[in-house]
Image (cartoon, rainbow, N blue to C red; front, side, top):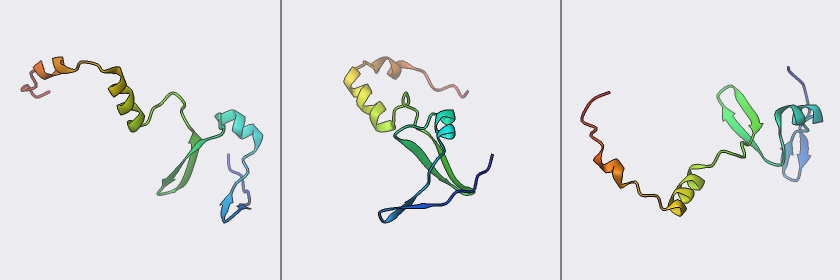
Length: 79
């Protein structure tokens, strides 16, 4: 699907109005991800269940898990 839409002025920035049907179809809510790609911009829903690397690190520290058993792994074999 392709649609031609106009940019709207929002302060010193520009924005786009996304039709309600597309917001519902793709689960776009208050926050979205905007990726800059070689071929253009990609907009997609923010995955609420996925943590950033920083959030993952903080959660791991809070868990205080013992990872010392990983030190005993023999990694001399090439896989």
